[in-house]
Amino acid sequence: MKFTDSPVIELRVRDTLLSLHQDNGSIHVGTSVWPCSLVLVKFAERWAHSRDPNPYAALLDFRSKRAVELGTGCGGAAMGLFLLGLTDVVLTDIPAVMPALKHNLKRNKPALGKALKTAVLCWNNPDQIKALNPPFDVVIATDVVYIEESVRHLVSATAALVKPDGVVLLGYQLRSPEADKLFWELCDEAFDKEKVPHEHLHPEYAYEEADVFILRKKRNHEQNS
Ligand SMILES: C[S@@+](CC[C@H](N)C(=O)[O-])C[C@H]1O[C@@H](n2cnc3c(N)ncnc32)[C@H](O)[C@@H]1O
Image 1 (cartoon, rainbow, N blue to C red):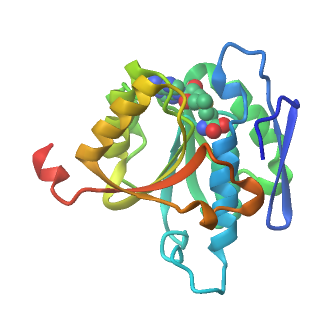
Image 2: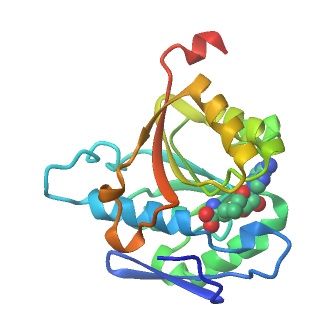
């Protein structure tokens, strides 16, 4: 599974085919569908209803969980997880990406209905964070670590949004060595991280550079921050 410049990316989630329209020519990276979003959804699909001994059963039991996605772009990750049972989810991004997101939600309305909410959230904006009414059980983020200057805001927004016993589902690919270094330094202060072994990813949606991480707040982080 590789990044593709086709204008339409199709993603089958169980019995439903999502169709995501992307514009790779835009100056906004959020109008493209980034592969880690697909890797995260297909990982979750593989395990969400698995009858095999399932190390992710509790993680992917989305019943009565509230979720938010940061830097959702075209919305593929949240849409896919919605089809796997994550029904209370708000998709967020910067204002410039909202038209592409809304276009894709409309495009997939037959499959999704009107249940998915959207909101503008710039990671450095405490009022927008507060308006979302945190904390959330689940924070979703895929392919959002690529600008060193925004990493500190990303990590602090994530920490502000997730419950003390909540989880962050992170689709990750190294995009910038500087952003990567700072991101993991800051994450190590706030979160414990678990890397999903590659053999647990969906075999058709796995490649060497892409990872799924599960982040959980460190027990002492609330007191220290
Ligand atoms: C590489 S794209 C990934 C989009 C989508 N998550 C995916 O995997 O297809 C990064 C996303 O993060 C958003 N983003 C970047 N900096 C941001 C910031 N400071 N506040 C909010 N969103 C931001 C971008 O607008 C974009 O949608």
